[in-house]
Length: 447
Image (tube, rainbow, N blue to C red; front, side, top):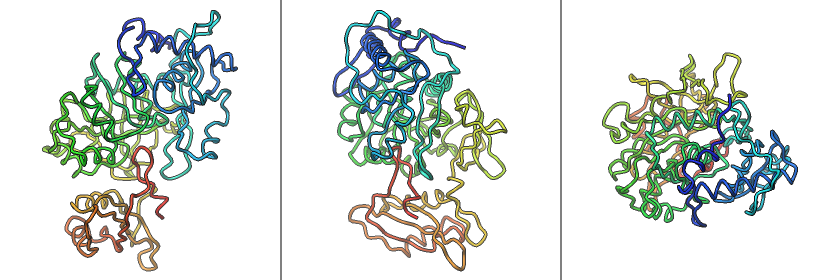
């Protein structure tokens, strides 16, 4: 099945509507379309053809968006490169690319013989995204135009996105969470406010000055905004937070500050969101038992919890190459469904600690520790123990100026957890704990 090229359609219907707003300038859909058409010609001159991989080694902003849409118009496969990676890590991403875009493509008159693709084949690969690599080396995920389209439609329904949506992206566009904001905006002809990186002062400014209606966050960036005093942003309808566990105490704190926080669960192999708190429920906070969940599946997505509690996903957002022989995407994440069918994420299969024959999910213990007002963040993992096999060990980062007593932390855990889940050891460190750009804890770097 084919659909009209997203950017061409947006430029035809909303030529003067702002497609991109950035610190370096703003582009309407007409200008972005013209720039992307010129860029597609540049890529063709450099040897790129439909189906070829084109690596985009540019920071988030106008030039990145031009190169991304140039790939789409040409029918080439876009491969975003995370510029924070070391040279050897970047080289793994660049391998197989016919063209590497490391400088802006520029603007100019369109070439007469430009091989523009007027439609998108929904079965064709659109982008290659590299996973964040929390437990192993990053792996490539091929997402099709259909994956991206269904993700945008499902997210749009859950969050009731309208024509005047203005979503702020301060996440890396080399990962699916940030990239999906640019794609979603083009599909719906709405505005993406794009920052090169997360800078708390700039985000605070643009939430107000640019009248952002939505923003994507992870737990750490949400906490930073709250620490800087963010309260009741006038235009914000949704602060969508995910990318890893979000402590219930942090969500409560956000709602007390008047932030419309909604939780989401997703992964690269499912083109970003799998479950999302519907907009009409976001203002409820934690007043109801389902308030701490990551919401129900998108309308186009099916969710199942396996016998070992692994989260399984299927539907049109799932990358074809990620589907197992049983027809499901095996996420490697653990979870449960509450009484309303909302997803509760409890941890990673590979992170499960087996202590004295009992299985312990680190995220459950971390949530208890991070509820302590003097704890900034915590990581729970296994250390070898001759008696227990694996001993539950907590690495705790105190807040600035706080003095923590390990025995008090032990008592806190004992009041909320079964005895076998209480950490045997506590390690107090200055921090910060190692995390991916999306906020996921790099537990393998702490072992």
